[in-house]
Length: 257
Image (cartoon, rainbow, N blue to C red; front, side, top):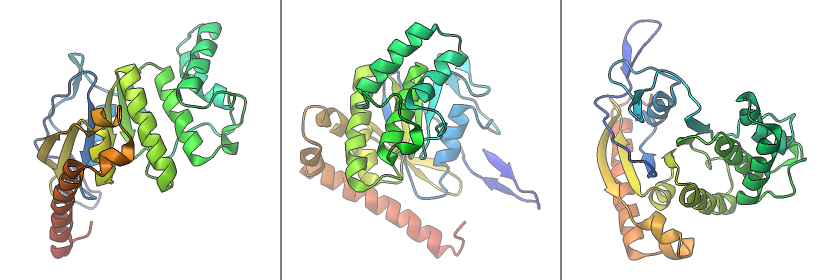
């Protein structure tokens, strides 16, 4: 992906990025600022067209946004003047789903994300963590094949963020959805991704991949136990060092863009 600048010149945002993601995988993407993580996600979402190459889903070329790909943003991007139910039901209603079916699905999703009884609440009355739960439910209501998450927990406080990590794992396992998660948190990337992609900038590219056991372990064990394990700590320090060295190279280059 190459962006042409208005005043001339270009930014080579991504180069030779090639991934084959299996159905039902949870993939986390990590790297320093400017490595093209969000650009990559926007290309998969269909918001951007790559300069060269293509994205294929179920053997069909992605040419724009589509219902088979759902997006969860850092801020919920909810309709704040609507109720929780109205937000979750919006997509199915636009798709012409029967009202009774949509209402039943909405109630099921509220139970899954731990918001039973909040359906008639206006979104603006909810905390940040609760709003992100609504965003997850709204995404799931459209039954996408792939869920794309761009720093979905980044704006939450530490305790709420940890609880939401557990919810994301629960939803992944119960729904069998393919999830691609962008995050700046090394710990979060290791904890949630059964597959971790580490990217480097200038141009954005994949420098290392990990197959990780921690997401599966967290489904049967306490999160704190998993994060305190020797293997988790060692992997976290290895990845942190890698990211730190990249940041040092960026700063040392005298160009912080």
